[in-house]
Amino acid sequence: QVQLVESGGGLVQPGGSLRLSCAASVNIFSLRAMGWYRQAPGNQRELAATITSGGDTNYADSVKGRFTISRSIAKNTVYLQMNSLKPEDTAVYYCTGVFGTGEYYWGQGTQVTVSS
Image (cartoon, rainbow, N blue to C red; front, side):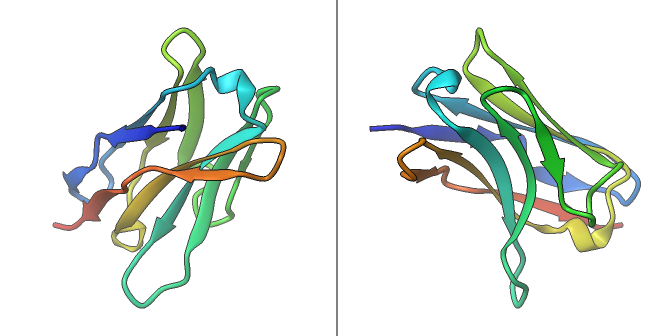
């Protein structure tokens, strides 16, 4: 079915930046929305950012002003640009896509570690 392949995670110092990529096996317009969840050990799963098929974006308060979700239609790829990273941003980040039917698909997750 739908495959979401993530890349771009790694170790970065506080204040640094990373860009995550999520390559989809389907036309992004066939999905109602895509987004990025994050999960840190002992913490609740948080929906960090979303983008709809129409291009509307939303962000969690915890990342607003620092993270930007964007897309390349030609590449069927969604990005998460993360700037001014903080240690509390450390988590596994999961790319998600949802059809209008409510079917959800998840990427494998990529680790982001913010530490000095």
